[in-house]
Length: 188
Picture 1: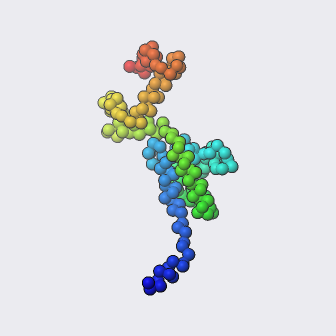
Picture 2: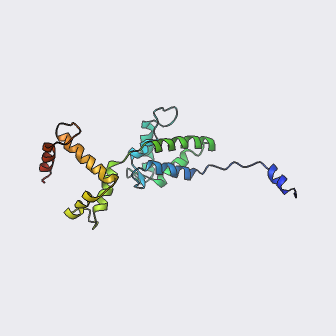
């Protein structure tokens, strides 16, 4: 009709800029397998590739983790803010296409790999049982583990199973003797 559409349609379409912080947020969440709100070095290593030509090999990933952590609060964990700020800084010279290509590869790696930071899971399980926030578990608080369900309990049971079996014949099964020995040594 009035010609306005012709002018609007003849203007070049601006390419939308990649939402880099949001993309990095998605990668962080995909790596944060234990949903602790921070990444352990084990979780961060999910971004490593086997080919250093196409990405970050394991030694590079470890170095990056320590740099990110040292630029943050140096606690051995990488928070979401530390992760996003560091990678925004490191990727600022990349074109949107190069940034999208790199981060899509990271996202695929993080979604494909699942690691559970056993220490973080056990610490969360302990905190969940520590009803009085004393930093210690009494018998009643510890007994909650027996009725709990989920990944945290599975990790604890798996750890106990491996420990019991390791003390015995290491066959992947816990015999009555291994079970008794474990519990006697634990003071049961």
